[in-house]
Image (cartoon, rainbow over all chains, first blue to last red):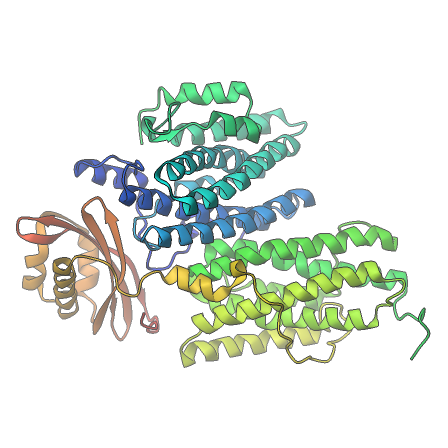
Length: 251
Length: 330
């Protein structure tokens, strides 16, 4: 088998329309919409849930590639990644059902592939840093807020399902922290590169200031500081993330 | 009936069998994991995604049992080079249009074979002193039955045309030949084939029919009636290569991919279908599949509402495949 594969090999059914995130955001801004779905209407919630469903699909694909691409990695690492594939495949199903619950369908909004691109890093340590800590950390922020909004609008289906997904994501972040440490033991340069990769991803997913510290009802994506602590992020890391959100300018 | 303590496997032999099983489980786990990204069809992705973890647990259980049999933990061992060649062949289909081959290899050849081997081993493993191995086999047997049943559902959904079924059958025959030559996963020959047993009752989350239903989503693409009419007229104009009619639907300043237009102009089509409808704000992205005797082209259009109604604001060819067979209609 080809290992690893180029990011352009990601296969999709015709029902999905793939676009650059920047282009989608610009098209929306040109029409007077916010660049990212803000959860203020049922329509925007459906768009957010669709984006998450696609993200879960790419996370499943990324974890699957990690199982495939690193046969020489420790067996326990492969086990954790295989477990993550299973979790993500269930998450895809959960979000497909939530999409149906909200009156949407797979392919209703364009797909962007930033997450998949991050999952194509050639080094296993960079992948777990970028995907499990960077992107799953973002998932913790997004899902924590979604649980809050679902509770507020009285949607117990959305609230309970996303709460369980959030619990899985916390586990994935912990896996990421564990394997970032273990895979880079005795190799500080590899660790530095992996963390740098994660920080680049964090910066990119601040989405030009869309992710910020603040109340769930006020900001589009609020940083879930308590959940991040539970997932094993240090105070220093959380503080650094908040600082970077204050200077991110591009989406 | 023989003595309760009669056994057919010395410890070393039992350890070797488990290393063989682990080889097949580990290698297929890695293949399934790698294929998820290479497989376009969402129900097939979910099928593979569900089973990667089960296979990892099978490999792990065999690997943990090994030290209890005086062998090194977590080691895999193919029985011979011919079985390696079989697994190499099974992994060959990596192209997006080869999902049927991927699934046939795993769900019609490898898994039914290892299921019959596990059942045979279970029958012959001594129930007094080999319960640790028997318990692992029982779990694997239950999983493999469930996997085979789910794989059959997804394959039935994907291989719908006689040509696809023929392709599947040819590939299955090739792989069955290879696994027979290898003497199977243990190299000791193939155990007698068994009638398929019904898998245990499905939990909702493991129902492959649900994955198909969820992925299909809609049966009629939701869009405003006036846009539906506009897209239909535009599609007819594309098939007819009617430039005047096409021009009527293009918005002033349309973002045109000239190479795309050249591709469209040089091809002969006999039908069009809408295959995707996505929304960006108030605008709609509509993907049209154009089919001709020798070509299949997918065109992505972005439609914007205006005073004159819906117009194409951007047009590009998303893909063009010459010589591809016609796909089943939605």
